[in-house]
Length: 297
Image 1 (cartoon, rainbow, N blue to C red):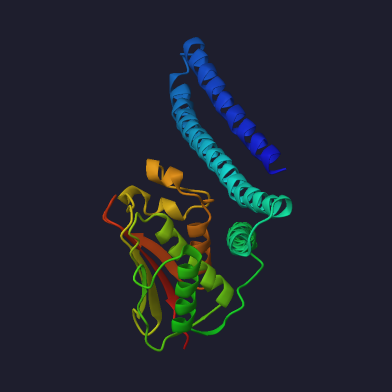
Image 2 (cartoon, one colour):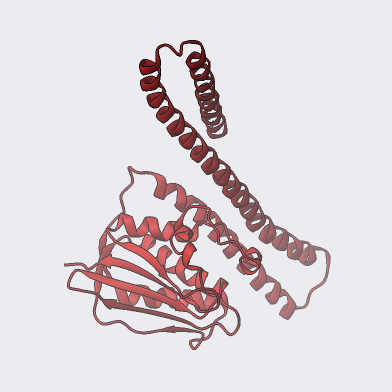
């Protein structure tokens, strides 16, 4: 249904462009044939020319956006297909090995650990897709409650270390003072985890990430995730929060992902009355993501 609607929209704007071009041709012919009505035709010509220019600009802008959106959706489908297929194939392979061959106990435990990691990766991908759908549902509001920010960030840091096999030096968490936020625990945890996951994925070894938070005023706090990774070009600092968008480049093309993580972070920030932005001096200089949230009164 979505594809059919998009095709109808494209057809409409193509027809609009063709109609405007036809009007310009008729206007020219009318000018030649009825040149004795110079004043009237000049007035109409100026109006129609403005309409034609506006229509062509609108038409071109719409088509370019549609082409880009289609490309992003195709890239998203390919990424999701890969993210779903790879862990399933891995789990299937290890299960077949356990079923058809005799495996010693130590090797069996190793296989179980790998399958658990693959299942976690599969669940994370599915949860990202489902969460994106829930964020798009305008009728659903976050279930807000008073949360201790220090505990929430410490849990996220520990979970990221376990998931990505990082040491405390690789992911350094700076304990925060007694700060509390009013929000949905699941959504805020998802936002912070997405920032940490991105920092890990876009960092070259050795990974060095810092998670911290501070009060900006008596009303807002800022959660910062800083890495020493590949950095972000200044022209991409705002684009990266769009749905399905991924920064083009040879390194980012090798990084697995769906292009939904930062979109979810921005959606969570908006739903909690906050905002998020990225800071970077450019490629190779690392980056810092700042998630601003209101303090609980």
